[in-house]
Length: 306
Image (cartoon, rainbow, N blue to C red; front, side, top):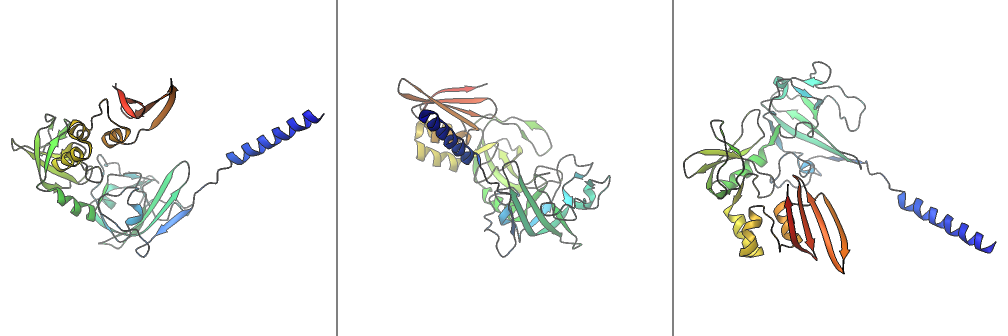
């Protein structure tokens, strides 16, 4: 009888502990940012979740997204959709679509920003005032993330003008709309910053030795999607040595690299796993585009790209 009582007690304690561990409080608080409490804007990122809390007081230009002839669905509203049940679309046609002509080609002041985070989604609402008409609207920046460019971000991109870059061997578009793939390592120089209507936002104009100019897109910080700067190559070579520095700058991973080097080259993996083998630690890191890296005791020993 005593043994049975002890077992019941242990089971009840175990169940209680399990219940305690499974209680995860939700965090769906709405945060409001105005000019008074906005975070400092460093102009290194455009309109995305890294900069939302910094946008009050900034000016945005709506150049529009690609192929927006059918308008903008559930993107512009007459009320704050994070704090209100009202989902009336701004100047709607067909109930949920704002015509492109009503919002594209205009400048907007950011008056307020609301963010809401939970375990399933990240919400953001921007209160905008159109400069010319004074009309106010609420905008969901996640719907068409490349349709607006912050003027501060655009101006900051001019720091690249005059810098030397090297091609990463990716497809790029020329000034006249042709698609080409420069040879990896081909030298280019940034000659201007551009912004086109119905495009992916602000871009750098790169000129090669042959005089052909192509578009390149910054991806935050000091990196450019299609190119790597001479300054970044020098920085990573100084940090990681001649053997690995240039490889990392060109976003390549090789055996012998550390986990830090891999993350610098490819970013954070979306999945990690590890197991012990004869006292040694074997890790498998998975990245997008079917890239896998295995590290043995912290050093890369196998790289697979499918």
